[in-house]
Image (tube, rainbow, N blue to C red):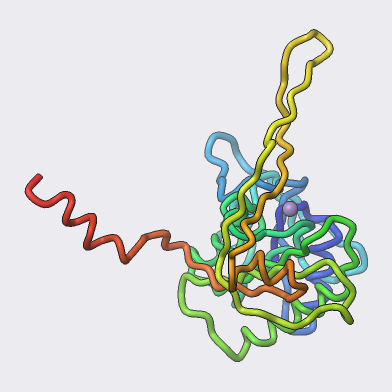
Length: 248
Ligand code: MN
C-alpha cells in the first residue's frame, strides 16, 4: 500500500482497513505529503526508512523520506521479504482524472508497481472534505474483482470515486482517460521584500464533449475505472511516421 498524501493520511488508513481482510498488508508511504510529484524518483540524496505504527491498524508500516515511486520501489526491493501480489495506492484526497494522472504521485506509485511486474490499482476521491466510508467500500469491491480477474502485465486500474453519499452513486463505469485543461494557472503576488512570486492555482476547464471519459463519469456521479498502461506509444502513428523518415 502506498500513497502521495503521506503515511498518516486518512485515505491510506481507510484503504488499509478496507483491504486488510483480503490478506497481509504492508504499507510503505512518504513521511510527508508528496502530492503532484508525478513519477519522480530520488537519485541525489540517500533515502531513510522508519518503521511506524499506524493508528489502530496491525500492519507493517514504513515511512520513507522519498517520493511515492521511491516507496513502491523500496517496498518491493528492500522492505518486503517477498514481492506483493498487488500494489494499491490511495485513497487520494482529490481526483486523479484525465491528464492529471501524469502529475499524480498516487497514480505513479501504482504505475511503479506495474513497471515492477505487480498488478496495481490507484484510488482517489474527487473532493477534499471526504468521508472515506463509501470510497473504502468501492476500493474493496475493485480489489475483490482483481482477485478473480487478473490484469494483463503493465496495466493498472485508475479508480476515481465521486465525493457524494453512497445512495447518490449511480454505479460503476469503465472509462477512458480524458483530457483536463487548466486556466489562470498562477497567482502572482509580492513577497515581503517586494519581489514577485508565483503560486500554482488553476481553474479546471473540462471540454464538455468527453464521452466515456473518467471526467465525464465522475461528473455524472459514477465511480470511474480506467485501465491504464505505461506504454505511451501512438501505435497507429508508427507507420505514418515511418513514411516521413523514409530516405533520410
Ligand atoms: Mn495526493
